[in-house]
Image (cartoon, rainbow, N blue to C red; front, side, top):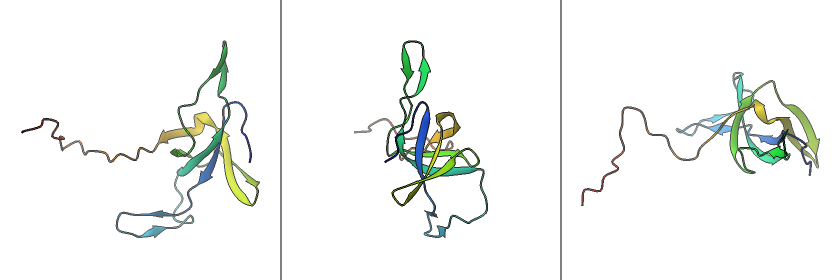
Length: 110
């Protein structure tokens, strides 16, 4: 297994995605400037005075990153992408978002 150094991150690109209605979007769908992948490994972080600054991700997190930033690498028959941590633009939260026009009921009416 590859072990990234410094503030590099190793990602497994998610190549197919299903819409809510069940339609599969293949990897060769219209090009999008943002890609989605899963964190496989990461280095210790970027150097700061007194050590390293930790990353804000964990192995297994699904992230969004810029399309042109990663370099493709192969290891053990698998294809990965390696990039700088700063090229990750967002962590995908598995908790569903509440639309702005809907307010959750936070008060128990019992």
